[in-house]
Image 1 (cartoon, helix red, strand yellow):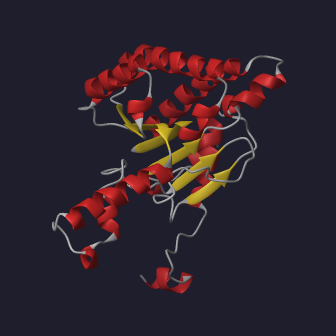
Image 2 (cartoon, rainbow, N blue to C red; image 1 turned 90 degrees about the vertical axis):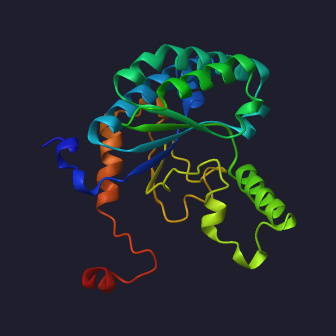
Length: 248
């Protein structure tokens, strides 16, 4: 039986988040420039998105470009932005065909104009699609997102719209760029690194983490299925005991 056939489709994580790590090291292994790894990383994105959509995952968030990534060599950043524009434009018909909606989180206004406009064009074109929602984290920082949310709430307090004592976690949820997107049940990171790297720090509070040594360009459908199977073997207690879960 294949890994895909072993998955219990009644217990799928509604939302999977992925830190796509290892493109540069993958390229280095072939004696190539880092952009070679990024180009091949796009293939892994397509494979993963299609596999996730096929088995019924509702949300897939991909950490594509962090605010810290702006500190990389300018040539690499420029190449990445061009790759992003070309890929989004080229894949828009595929997203439409597969009923996939595109969203983005992060400070996208910092993106080059050409990149920003193409991103918004595809987001608008796919906004009515009802299948998988693919969320691209671009120029994204969880700390940036949380600070902005706190500023917005503080402004409402200052203006007298809300009282400090009435601030809730749900209120902060609604001020984040992930508003309306359920928290990930499963977070996958490739390349063997075991940290969250400023990714969805608020939203990952109760997520299951899955780390694999696979470099991102080598991540295939079977790797996604393996991560989901691993997730389905875990007991998610949310502070309760195993006995309480059985009783309930």
